[in-house]
Image (tube, rainbow over all chains, first blue to last red):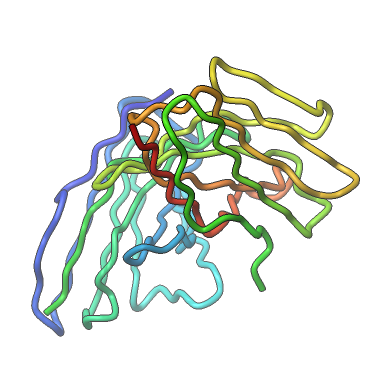
Length: 113
Length: 113
C-alpha cells in the first residue's frame, strides 16, 4: 500500500477565490488521480495527473477550473479556481500502486460561502 | 450514463447478521472489481477486490461473489459488527485503459446492537 497525505484537511473559502490542494505520497507511484465527492454522494473522477505532462480531464471538468500539477512521482496539486458554493465537496487524491489497485488519501473538505 | 448500479442505498443489520450489498455493471470490458469502505470524514479504504476469473473471494468476514454472465457482483459481510457501520462503494475498472475506477452510488450500512 501507500501512505497518502493531503493538505489542507479542510477549508472554508469565499466565493470567487481559489484553493490549491496538495497530495503527497510516501513512495513513487505511476498513477495519481483526483476525485470529487459531493455531500452524501459517490466519487467522480476529475482527472488523471500525469507526471511531466498535462493532466487528462474527464467529461465535465476543464483545466481552467481545475488546474493540476504533477512535478514528480510523489506529489500533485489540484486547484479549484473561481469557486462557487457548488464547488463545496470533498476532494480526494488517489494513487495507483499497481495496474489495478488504487489507494485514497484522507480527502480535503471544502466549503465555499 | 451510470455504468455501475449499487443497491440498496441504505441497510440496517443487527449485530451478528449478514450484510449484503449488490452491484451490477454494463461495460463488459471491466475486469477488476474492488469494494471500498468509507467512514465519515475519511477517505475510502480498499476492502477487498476480485477479478472475473473467479466466482468468489473471501477475506476474513468479507466475501465477494461474482456472476460474470449476469454482470453482477456482491459484498457479503458475515457476523456484522457495529464497527462495520460505514458507507460501502463498489467500483469497476477496465485495467486496459488508464486504470480509471467507476464507482457505484454507495450503501450506508448501520449495524445495530
